[in-house]
Amino acid sequence: MLSLFYDPIYTTGIDPTARFPRERYRLLAERLRGLDHIELRQPRLARREELVLAHDPSYVDAFLSNQLSPEAIRRIGLRPWTKDLIERTLRITGGSLQALEHALSNQTIAGNMAGGTHHAYGNFGSGYCIFNDIAICSFAALKHPDISRILVLDLDVHQGDGTAAICSNEERIFTCSIHAESNFPFRKQQSELDIHLDDEISDADYLECLDRTMDKVGAKNFDLILYQAGVDPLAEDALGNLSLSRACLNERNIRVFELYRRYGIPIVVFMGGGYAKQIETSVDAFQDLFTSAASYTNQPDRLKHCFIQRSRIASEHEA
Image 1 (cartoon, rainbow, N blue to C red):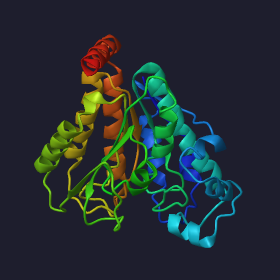
Image 2: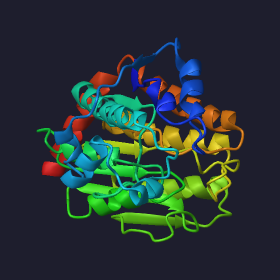
Image 3: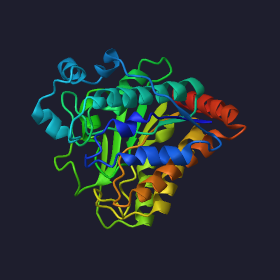
Image 4: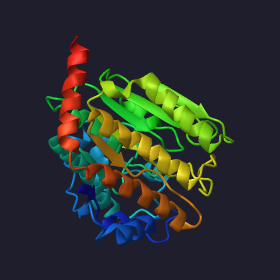
């Protein structure tokens, strides 16, 4: 079973008049609920001590007490602001942490039907992102005795600027972002590896670029992959500058999940961006993402294969 964390507050916690496409969570849950090999699970609330792994305590406390300044709220962009955003944010972050815990405990793929909030910095939010759940999960994972190297693979159309900034001084976290050069954020940060794409890139060239990047990164040498799987590179996306097809994004996901099958590396999937004018277009691509992930967790001999592969890779690394 693919454990996928979701709560209705992912939708209801955003004001219905907000510009953010809040209904994508509800629509996707309706499609996935009841499918074989996918289990929707209730996310817990993230705790303050988890938030401050990646964020300034004063920023965390201002948010938790609903005392962010109007300027801070405007920079985040989820307006009109509601008090329900506090619980929503804590459940999204808690869901990401639970997906991480499940992936590590079971050496598997797990996901959050939200999250991927990669524009949040240590002391402020930005671009619809309040706390950076990818960075929080990264630092939480490093407390695990079997985790010494983490790959943050960000394939959203927008650069993972906040993640790059927060994780910049931690050598055990390798941030890799493949994104549209011309898109938000217009002031990019320095990831460990940034691939800036031209707007007119074709499906074939994109997938070739992904393959080259994975070869360069050496994904097999990591203990954990945190995968920001935004679907905003779609041609139909209102906030993306790329023109990729649904089939291309599905193949992108398969190539990432193949790293799990081949090397036994646990993967946590964060939903990321998706802003197609016809919301069903984004939902279609997200459905592809999670059904594909589920297909990789439903392989009878997979666990045995994973442990054999991981042992072999560890031996080669030590040699």
